[in-house]
Image (cartoon, rainbow, N blue to C red; front, side):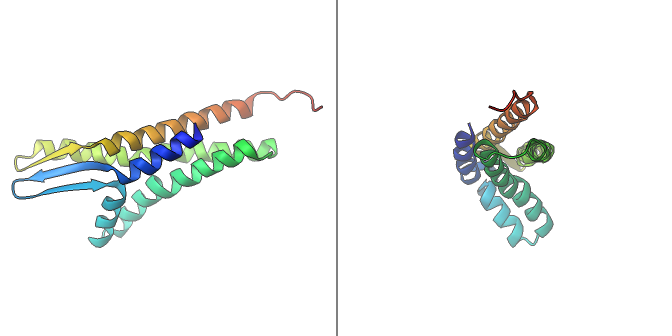
Length: 149
């Protein structure tokens, strides 16, 4: 499931997530190109927030889950890492929320139309799969361990 989440994340970050059509132009954005556009428009704070929670954090989360799966860590370390991954993981849906707000806002306007694209669904699936993996890993970590052999 970790590998599936990695593939979905890579595809979801690069596929178009939103198309905005105005009377005279059309723009299609992926998560990556959206971050680049925000940066070029000098919206540094918003670009950083979306970059951190949509690119950096999911990659770090999946890497950490992979390490937890392969490495033998002390139970306290496992639980601590899983706690933080679960807590911060909720913010990874920020992009999906932002696109939903944009679509609703633009649909209310007369001069523009916004359409969600396949990338938002793939990105959302990647985040959901990583949340399921975190949940399963957390449940495994909370199980009582048998006596060492």
